[in-house]
Image (tube, rainbow, N blue to C red; front, top):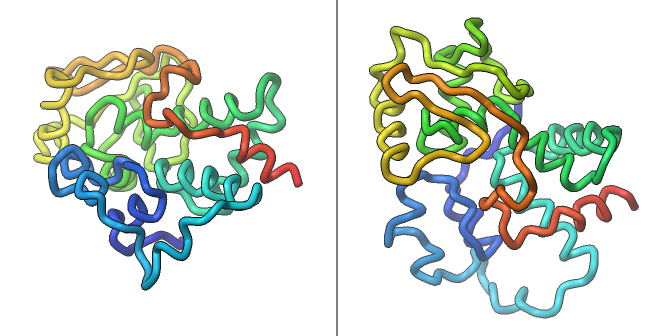
Length: 211
């Protein structure tokens, strides 16, 4: 399966905003966005002119894809699913992205970032309703209980991630029991609750794919 293996901070520089791809590093002074590093490429100033309508739509799609660590085919399939659902397509898309298992593991602070959460899931450390699920794109439903396997609870990356629960809390649509290293997906989030996407216009993605 294809995946991006290059420097992830380069992606943040490309989009000109924090995508929160490296956990604690994104909150530190080492973040290239905090340092106001220029976009990658030999002449980034040549690309700072006014963008076309298509260019704006493309950039919004790339931002969302990169925040959730997805490839084009998988992201497009998720959009097609959102399109078939009743309601507003853009909000449906965000709901589907937020209910992915790797994202829920990240939201519960069982990992420091989504990339790390994906590895935790792939390496069979996570149970959903008592059964091992190693598919990062698995759609979690309200009421599902997510927990870490008993013999994996002491892993350093999981324990380090759980320290964030006391520091910054958890998203309002999940609950976490730190001692048991388990949590519950309570409900689908409302669009305004997803602070990772503040300033992102998912409607532009709908317009892009509707052409």
